[in-house]
Picture 1 (cartoon, protein in one colour):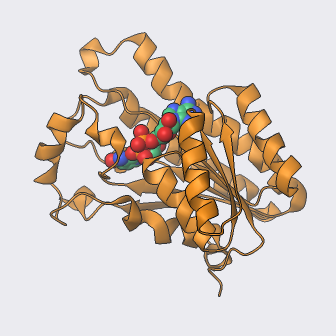
Picture 2 (cartoon, protein in one colour):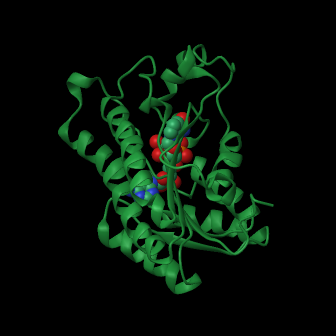
Length: 252
Ligand code: NAD
C-alpha cells in the first residue's frame, strides 16, 4: 500500500526505449499517470500507446533534455495536462565510446550536455514545482560506472558524467529534503537495452559478462521495483542515495 502511486503524476525522460520504457511501465502499473519523454517522439508515442493499452493515463512528449527551452516546455505540458509533477525520472543518457587520448571535445561536451546538464535542467524545472507544493520524488539514472571503472574502459566522459550525477543527487537530496523533495539515483550495472547493442559497445559486452557475479546482464525489468520504491512514500526517509543494482559487479 505504501508503494501505491495512485493519483501521482510522473514523467520519464529517455522513456522511449530501454530502461526508461521499463520505468514508465512500472510507475504506471503502480498507479501513476506517466508522461513519456524522448528525443525521438515516435519512441515516446509508442511507449505511451503501450501504457494506454494497459489502462494507464499517459502522454508522449518530445524533448532534448540538454536544451532549457525543451525542458521547460516538457514540464509546462505536463502541468497543463495533469496540474503538477510529483515524480521526476531523469533517465535520458548517452554512452559514447573512445580511447581517452582520442576523446574529442565534441564527444566530451555532448556526453556532459545530455548526462549532466540535462539532469541539472530537469531537476531544476521539476524541482521548482515540487518545492512549491512541498512534495516531490526525483529519481536520476546514474550508473555503476559512477563507482567503479568497468573493465575494459574507453568511457572517460561517460564515467565522469555519471560520477557527477551521483554528486548532483547527493547535493540536491540534502538541500531539498526539509522542503519535502527527495532526490535519489539508481546505478544499474550492464543492462540489456538498445544502448549496449550499439556497434561500439557490443564487443565490450562479452568481456563484461565474465565480470558479473550474477552471470548475466541485467534486464530492464530487474530495475522496475527500485524505481517504484524510490517514487513511493515507502522511501520517504531516503535521500541523496545511490541505489546500485548490478548483480554484484562492483564487488568483484
Ligand atoms: P537507450 O539508449 O536504450 O535509451 C535511451 C533513450 O533516451 C533513447 O530512447 C533516446 O532517444 C533517449 N535520449 C537520448 N538522448 C536524449 C536527450 N538528449 N533528450 C531526451 N531523450 C534522449 O539507453 P538505456 O540503456 O535505456 O539507458 C538509459 C539510462 O540508463 C542512461 O542514462 C544510461 O546512461 C543509463 N545506464 C544504462 C546502462 C546500460 O547498461 N544500458 C547501464 C547503466 C546506466
